[in-house]
Length: 126
Image (cartoon, rainbow, N blue to C red; front, side, top):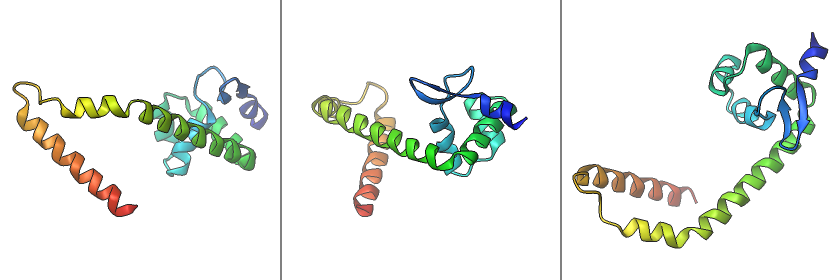
């Protein structure tokens, strides 16, 4: 059975992928790193128990390789996020200056308070 499980992991242009899906092992790694149970991982990613077990087995057997690729994926995702954040900074500032939608002023105030609280938390952690 172990050979069948390992065969379910294939390399595509997206990286190590669970056969028959678009789910990569890097998607699974996000949940493994957060110590989610296999059942939850399967439910959230719409995977069968067999697919989850194949992914977890492959990760365990090839931990160093998967971890190295996972770190590259995380780095690239962060670079892309920063690029688009910088590219859209002016537009975000314009949007932030817009008045609240009519009839939603209370919700708007609550949202602005949450944003301020989150920003203060980020600044205190930096």
